[in-house]
Image 1 (cartoon, rainbow, N blue to C red):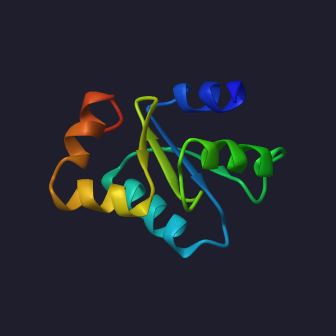
Image 2 (tube, one colour; image 1 turned 90 degrees about the vertical axis):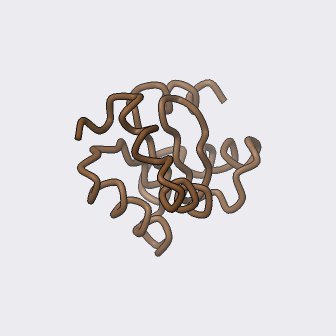
Length: 102
């Protein structure tokens, strides 16, 4: 989906989320606690949210939220993000794309 590509390349960190998802909340909090200002799309609130969710599913995202893109590249869902965080790879990724300066 062309719209999805445009959305993920607009900002260094993009999170697709739903307000009703506790894991989405956890991932958003992690990035905010780092001092990152991610672009967050709440799929249960925006127009064409279902369409975007289907596009994420076509990319292989399961579950479809939360899904994180860093530097325009698909990182994955909560498990992948937490794995990167625990093995200390997440912060260097964020620094490389200019989302984190410290």
